[in-house]
Every structure is written in C-alpha cells, then in structure tokens.
Length: 167
Image (cartoon, rainbow, N blue to C red; front, top):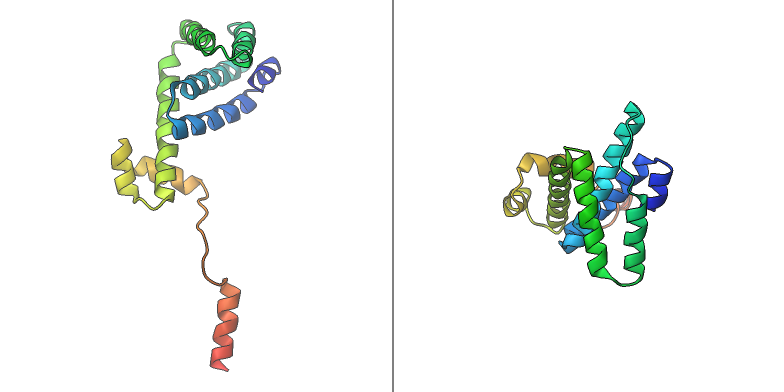
C-alpha cells in the first residue's frame, strides 16, 4: 500500500499507514515495525512538503520494492539492511529525520499508554510508567473514543423499570 501511495503522491494514505504501523509498534515493541513507521511517516512528510514546494524528493521506490521482495522471500536480514539504508538516505535528504523518529516513538508511547488506561490503569500511573505527562495522555485519550463495556440495562430500559415501579 505504501508503494502505491508514493506512486500516487498520496501523503494522507501514507500518514494513515504510518499511524497503523505506529499502533503495531506500540503493541509488539519490536524494531521492525518502528523502523517501518519512521520511514513511512518521514516519506509522508517529505511528499507533502515536496507537493507544496515543488521540491524534488529522494527516489525511494526501488528500495521499497526491493524491501517488499526480501520480505516475500523471508529474508529478514536483507529487509533490515534496506530499511537502514532508506533511513540514512532520508536523513541525508531531510534534516528533520531525528524529529520524525522522536515523533513516531512518542506517538507509539502515547498509544500504548492509552491501551493501558483502557484496561483500567489510572492515567497518572500509566503516564508515570511510560514517561509521559498526564496532559499528553489525557489529550490523546480525549480525542479517541474509548468504548466502555456496558454491563447493565440501557437507559431506556432503566427508565421503563422505574416507571413500572412508580406506577
């Protein structure tokens, strides 16, 4: 999907893919999803900026296609080497790569913290565990819809029962 989005210069799809990958990185806490999230996030930023400024961007499609082939061939070492080279190329092209890496890691930590809070751990404790401020966590949780399981009867059923009792 990322390769097609790059071909179409669709930075919004790349951003969405990066968000999904950040989610995976926060769950599995492995290097490969985190590296992929950084690459996709950086490419989304670069493509967005290149569209706005007509600035050329690095040619990354051949490397991404080669990375895909290495994954299809179960060659994890080649995949990691390609991704490492891509990060270096992006870093040479865009001096903000370090900021992108920090942003992806921070987003990953916030999403992980949100999941911990969803499972009943307080915001204060979750923020402390993952080295976040409570404000950062509350800001994210406030923007996401955390579905709370509903164990009891719905409001209309409770009101109906109350009417029956009062009659």
